[in-house]
Length: 426
Image (cartoon, rainbow, N blue to C red; front, side, top):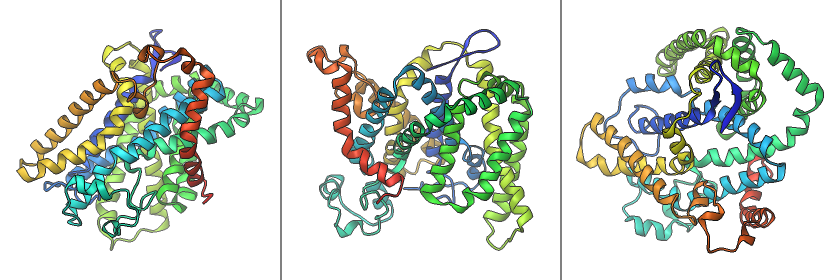
């Protein structure tokens, strides 16, 4: 999706570059989770590194914030092209159908290898699959943290929460488009300075972190921080003043981000890893400020450089962009499966890690090539079906009203419990 903003050389800034970068970074991050010492994950390699945690901390605070801001930006421009009904229908089908398919068929191997890694099961995968949908089977008693006891979303929580954020956005949209608010946002954007784009959002984020987010944990913390960046992306999407300010300050933001990263490393090494060390309220406030700065400054630098340089058409990006959803849905299961299968060979951390990453990406590309050629598979991986995909089917099916109606009927049984879960209605 091209953001309709002109950069210095009169080419449009293309958000697809950042989308591919953000999800590629996520795949690399999840691969590293196999090897970082002291960080719990579904399975762990025999080759673990404490130093790797320092590198992981460089991206851990803002990797999802980047994805949420991109999602907010994309939502803004989609709403400029689609009616609210079409937007909601499209999002519902493209998110909840892959989510349901993923929960039932993509995620289960993760639990299988996790249970084998923990020594809690000696079954073959076929035997495991035969009992997987038995919610009362005692073999899963230690794995009851899912949405349906042991059946969980795992890494697909992004799809679930993006759909929920979409609903909240549509509820808030009349408020966001009130003349007094839209004029205030535009006026601030038109007059924002290069230092204001650093300081003001940073202080707001620090206040939220220190006074609100620290009171939350688990899903609620993840939702609160995610929606904050999602709505930020939505609000600044078409505000050229923000993009120009981030472009001007990108180098300074990068330098300050590096400093904030050093503070986080210091906190991790001297406080987090040593539970005997106590910190006073002043130090806690400083570290909260450093955490907020680390999130925002990296984002400003990334968006600033992207606005400057990512404004050229690229055939590789054009190919990879529609592959993002299928690759995202598949990648974590492949990482866990390949990592588990390679573990007995004792290849060493470097070689094993390289094979896990290359193997995951290669299989993802192969699967994408298959999925995009099979129309019946495409909706289950977030891809859209066009008329040319199914020439034998009556054109009546592809009329907008019929398509929306069928899609809503299919996903409504999924949407209602997710909506209830998100707002704690049950």
